Length: 191
Image (cartoon, rainbow, N blue to C red; front, side, top):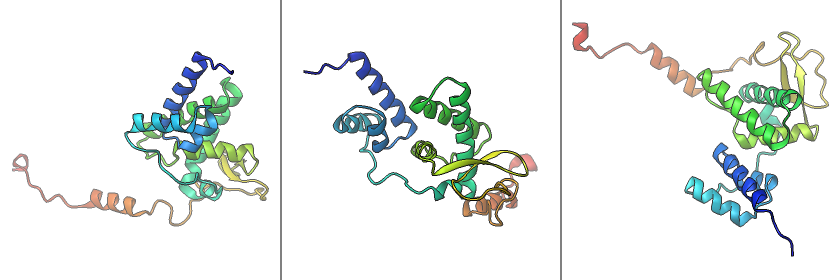
């Protein structure tokens, strides 16, 4: 009969709680903890008040190299690499810390987080399997996520050379229109 350490189990539960709070999907929880699927589902329901989302995890590297996701993915992965190389952490601990720093950076600048935790975890796995790599921009010198095994001798990042439609989403259009809208409310202070 195999006995499981109570302390080890408590650590696994604490890790699962932290991952769920960051937005981890069930498949990620199963990969990173030794807790049973049933236990993870119960924990997820208790924390979120709903069942975990169903469906497959993201599996395409293409999402990470499109304009805005590439900027956010590159930011996250540079933070992650720095923590692994200089911060004395690795594995899921490094991913969690890097993701928290990414969220702090995004919030500090008033941006919207494009990279979810599950995608960040998937990104690291794509790097581990050599499907993606970091490539320096020939203009700014920053390192950006690119497909592995493609020629990148003259690579220019999406910040130095944004695509023609970059930032021209409906949301951005409406925000810009709201900024330009004439003031129609004449308050008593204006009189």
